[in-house]
Length: 382
Image (cartoon, rainbow, N blue to C red; front, top):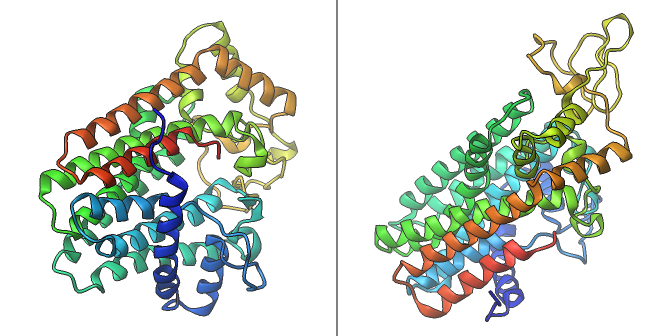
């Protein structure tokens, strides 16, 4: 499908509308948290100086604004929803960077890497709380319904992230479990973003549900593409090392699908990724980054944790993969069909998302913009 609307213009408008209101909302926060959030979003440098190259695509904000317009409301009606979903999205990224031990995002140090885990946690918590305050502060009679929808989506997103984290402690994860996790982790918030403008506009429930279904399917397609980029993406555009998800042994769609193939190559992949535990001397555990913990669990970020009972399979005790092993694992994932299967899931969920739009009674131009934005999201390279 070829986009018929300039998606860049749609995203630019969403940014120009949302950023001033987002900055206004951040002014309510304590100075240290405001500084960290402004840096994370990409507005400032670490020293607080304005940044000339802005960060983020504002896809969720664009969905929220377009969903209001698709129900014949003014774009301004969806703007509080755009601000709210961007706040929740950035809350999740702040926490994700810490949980994944990522030192960089968009070619810059992450908040926790600069200022420590505590400030990253507080900043994320503050943004999540602020998102509901932004909605309720509008005084709109539809605001409580929108805040309730956002809270449900946030709770589902957190549950999906919890599953993702739990999967790291399990050697075997089914394709169905992986898809359920992706639907919750990514689909829930995109579903909310694509419908919250309609909710704020007082659209019929059936219309809001159709838009939410569009966003949820788009979220799964988005995650599928993200998982593909996590292995085969260009580091120059993704901002992360090639094969990053393999290096971190993530249970992403391509990896889980490849492991489920059940042939000799999938068994080789399983052995390569999860087959050997490494112990240091005197019972010291060796973490994925090679550090020793003297009996304490060490996270991927290299931070000492609390000593816990060792699960059946403990990823913190697996040796780091060499560059050659990462390349071999990527090749095995592809040969086992993981890449092709994930690309097919992305297309299938994009088609389902577009089908949800077609079934709803929506204004023609915003409907087309939503469809073109969905195609852009699935065809992106970063």
